[in-house]
Length: 115
Length: 117
Image (tube, rainbow over all chains, first blue to last red; front, side):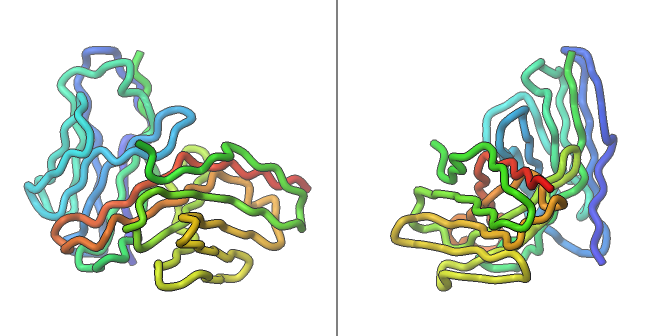
């Protein structure tokens, strides 16, 4: 069976510090990978998605970047965090060749607080 | 521009009664819709889905209805249980794209359901 891991579970960082959140998927190959953010009281906002190693699409202009160095590894980064980067970050995966039916499976999330 | 909207931020229901969660969308090209359930500090879990060729899909206590002309879908939970208390997100899939373009989901803001014993 497939599992998705995210770490760390919680993180408190000062403004201006760097960020690295990691997501890995097990039990599947060549998944589509996604990073979402849920800000307080808001819905899920898609930040990045990737259809393969080194292939990253950005959905919204922001202070963050993403990388996919390996097939089942997805990393969210920032060089300098802003207060507005606080939120709950979720990684998700889906089967690549699923046609129009794109059920996504989510990881446990990382709670980021920028002070 | 919010393409998927859940206009009720919260809903409170008595145990054993029906819970009805609503979702509206604006893009008539959406062809697949999903409901996710989310507990605090956890990732969303997939609940039920429906494609645009159907108007109803049922799975145990959960039924999703799709009204394409009204661009509206709803999730019915019958009977509601205290363990159903969570935030429910509806999501829509963008029009069919080649698999190598990612197949993105557009989420609503969520509705927090509280089922009281």
